Amino acid sequence: MNNDCLFCKIIRREIPAKIAFEDDEVLAFHDIQPAAPIHILFVPKKHVDSVVHVLDQEPVVSLLANRAVKAAEKLGIQSTGFRLVMNYGPDAGQTVHHLHMHLLGGAHLSHL
Image 1 (tube, rainbow, N blue to C red):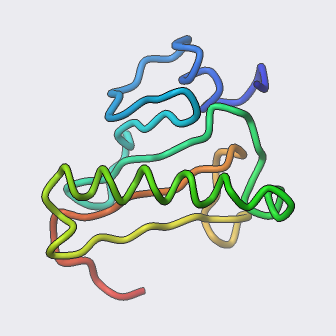
Image 2: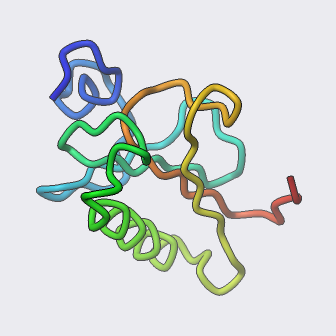
Image 3: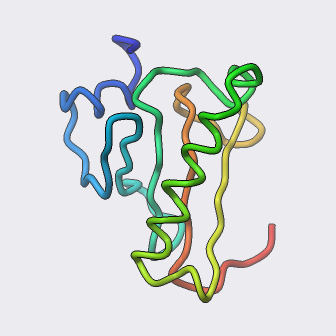
């Protein structure tokens, strides 16, 4: 855990969040600035700065995707489609330096 990391503070329950899912390895919570009707962030409980920092730990990306796909199914958006997004760096819009995956769905999502 990183003491200054926003997502680590959410994991430790120092900052409130609307929790969507939790297990021993992953916490998922609703984005406070949703870009779609369903916008949930999936974060590993172990702090990792970004996707480029997991190249030798690839299972963590699969772990997040697995939890997000299962959530999409439970939320009823798997049949119509959803988007999984991981950002890296300022040009991509990464504002919190803790690996996370966005699950977006619940409406037709426009192309970039």
